[in-house]
Image 1 (cartoon, rainbow, N blue to C red):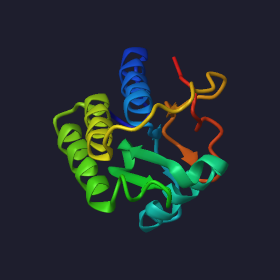
Image 2 (image 1 turned 180 degrees about the horizontal axis):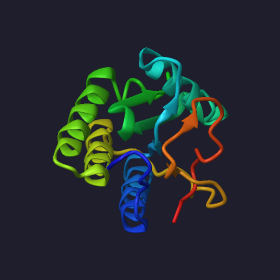
Image 3 (image 1 turned 120 degrees about the horizontal axis):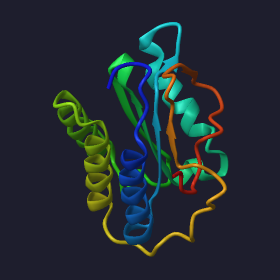
Image 4 (image 1 turned 90 degrees about the vertical axis):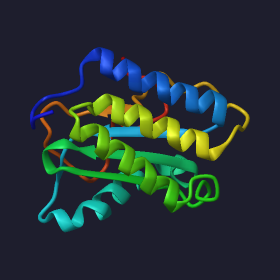
Length: 161
């Protein structure tokens, strides 16, 4: 995916389905952001991803955030402190590896879906979370690929179609 291209509706639907399944079967609160971050230096990417995770506000402690920046060739998985037992750093690292492998083959949405499934499988079965608030988007696909790393209004628990 070249900078400036967004996810197609069918790709967004595929990712939303994987998120919904992780929510229902594993009790995971997962959000995905696809788009480059506006940073002074790429060494700040992790810090920018952590700020986006913090923008999830009261959901942040138990949320998992996937930040995929195709134009910057960067991926981060940020987990809240309350979910780290179920999704430890090694699981997040394996999810990043799964994504980057798929991205290398040109499959952006497939890499994200595979990573979500991998995290959900590692987290194990848990009771479903309450139905998502469909007023807010859980997938933020940034077609212009240039957005800041501050508050992210498109991050949330509801579905995006």
